[in-house]
Amino acid sequence: MKTFAMPGGKPVLHGNLEGLELDDMFGFIEAYVVCPTTITRPFLPYKKQNNTLLFPTGEFFGVYYSEELKYARDLGYQIIPLRGYLFEEMISPFESFVSDLFASRQEAKKSGDDAMAYVYKILINSLYGRLGINPESTITEVCKKERYEYLIQNSNFISGDMLSDHYYMVS
Image (cartoon, rainbow, N blue to C red; front, side):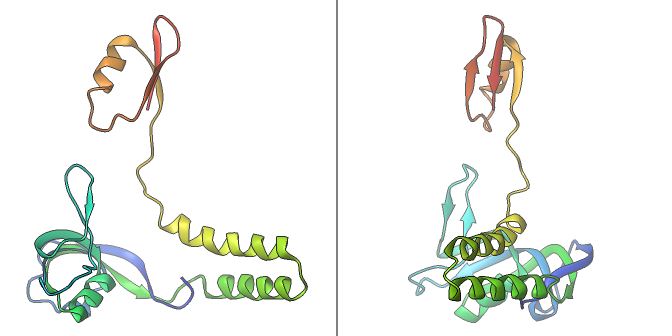
């Protein structure tokens, strides 16, 4: 977050990345991936339709950040970019923010102020967590029985509770 480049500018959708070099891409790319069977700890994850996360060997498709694909290629993976959103490469806007918080944390540690050192640590970690958060949110609604029965059959159903004879809360 402090020193590495980040995607910036307006994203451009490329429906066909054939003929472009992976090293010239910066963004989020759907790719055909071949992981060598000799790799004992695969690097790239693959999410099955049932949301099970695997780290497979063999052949699969997935959407990845370009820098992950470059790293995987350097490990021996074969990467064939198919399509994706490419961005301008920009300097991290968080360099001074992270540097200032880190310096404050070190100062708090030296002075024995463990509480403030912890606060600075949480602030730095929260920056990373906020940008890595899943954009899909849980939706909770209060509804009547017919709607409740429909929603509990949905594959995204998490939980449901009866609030009264006529109303249910479902997530």
